[in-house]
Image (cartoon, rainbow, N blue to C red; front, side):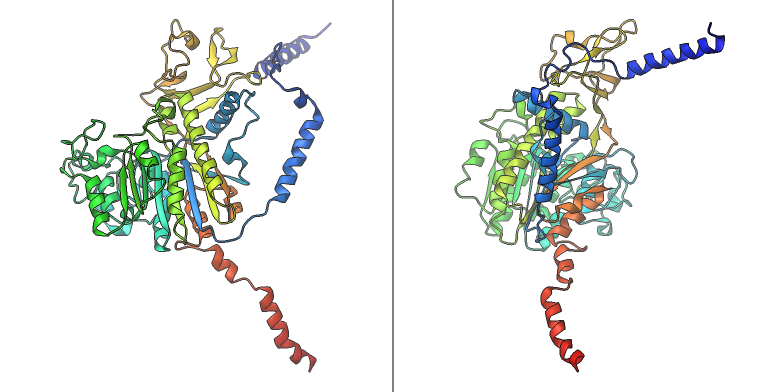
Length: 539
């Protein structure tokens, strides 16, 4: 007969076991139905591992100077976003999905970067752009200035001593060409990091500056800086959206949208006039047809502004009128590689971030796949021997990949599990955002029963109601291939990224790979040394 103590132990043990089973629920019937037969063999996984070892051993890292450098930036492309996007890609191809790899996930080097700002635990796209393009961490909301400048502090930002140079400026100083490509407004925080010096990322046009009671002459807006200031006025390729920042509010663009400028200036015409005065070939385009017509005879300078604001999401765009990110990337590379000294190109898949902010998970993943296509295009056009390609994100988001779903389950659908009220929940959910649903009688509504469920505008389930979903503070991944790619391994500050790229390219103020190599003793040096001292030693 058990004592009271033994009974108590048995109850606690059974409760613990039940709790453990809840943490890790048992497989249901048919759970592994999607698994391929070959994966049930242990030998399959052993051979897969050995093939990976062989591939690593066969890698030969180029130690040449990186003639060309391309930085791909997936705005808001968190690690869970990568995992979900690769799964979606595989499922679109008719596979289970989890085993799929994005193109840039095959790059030989992977690292992690920390994304915080000097004054913020969780970053925005302005301070991160300053970090990964200028090599300096600064304050939330400010671009191209050091951390003595607080957001909105025009007076301090006007002091050139606070300005920091970008890797684009380092490339220009070395005689290389520079281009920027984005699916956001070209004056948005990420691309602006290549050229702008501003205390506030929202000062994209003079109207935004004036609304804060400031003089645009003292605080030049970002669009004005791109057209009239160094280094933006030297960029050979400028592709993106954001036409409204370049036009007066009394003037309509080609699609009927009015500009936002209050100074009555047309910066597109001023960009063209600048190129005429410098006697260089140039072309402004605003749709895909015009862009593709440049293929046979590329001008030296190209400005493409395809929307009044951000470019349209790929899944919602008209493929006949709006170019894809891959098409923009290809044209940019074909233009810039004409410079024998090389180039620096910044390419942003910027609308991953916007879709996450709106809890539009399918659009966020599709934008990730579109950027992956652009990376694949770049690798096809450029040699791994002399071209460094770096892929990363500026910050994370609060989308989670959760539940205990069967292998191959629809990544955009509900988990196989239900909650305590027997209501299904999605495999991909958000911690906060506009997709919050009010509970009825303390029970969460069944989101799969909504009339627009699985449409492109359907907002995924969230826990905390907010007007916009927030960024996440977790680390983001870095992928690299090309000369000196192994420098990008490990965990490091985001501000180290441009210094690593500059090291490989031998540009900028810091240490250079080619200088380091030049200082190493060569075989010829030792032969000469031996010839010099041998007669002395023989005596």
